[in-house]
Image 1 (cartoon, rainbow, N blue to C red):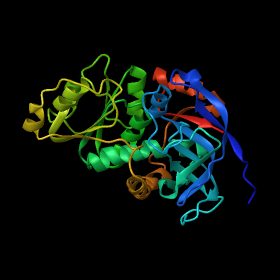
Image 2: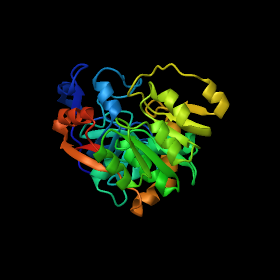
Image 3: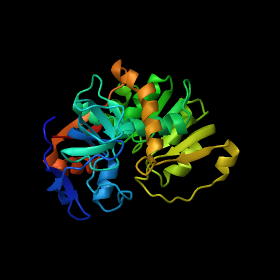
Image 4: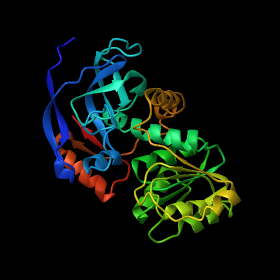
Length: 331
């Protein structure tokens, strides 16, 4: 095995602020702990939490690296003492707690999956997004074949993944997006109904598409006034799963809807979850989703790639919300 360098280039956050606060720095190459692998990163996904961390709104959990980046793909170059599954030279994609915007990154072995039949760029767009969608729509939301999923932000990385996965498991999909072009993109990915939230009311559109029944599962990343509207759009016994608050985390809501419709409103974050929790989600994704990716039924939608030193441009693009699918950094 070739000797590893002692230091590497990583993208640090100079101070809380705009995209220009992302700067290349020299950092020591991390050492994998007990059940960890060291990955030479080929590509890293860009996600909203990275942008929030850069703005100073989402500090990394205790013990996590301060380098942004929550999902990577690359080659295993070193193993911690108790690693059982992987060997040096394996190609993996992994969910990481931070540190993805770097030439080398540590991952827990149970949070890595084999890169099968995907390019490294595509593989880097899988972990954060597919883990989030699987856990929230299927595990927390209990989405089943024949049910209707309403997913907000259909052209985001989460949205494009949720549309495809829900369709692959036999659900109907209603989605919201902010332009005609984005609605067309959602329909092309399989959405049964795409609602332009700037010109149409998603509550009325959902009721009309379900013969007044409403959506059994709603995955929401907006919050704010969407919360009360989700309660209106939900079916009796509906499950609403909160995964982010791109609007406000506060709202004035008439909670009688929860009683009258027997609704469940739950939510989760991925980053702060325990190692075993994330490992369990990884196994479920490996069992239920990787075969669909291998069969070409579902795939990460890549909007644009940037070389890692152009991370500020990648963040600036994400902030415009013009993208359809994922933004990925390459090394």
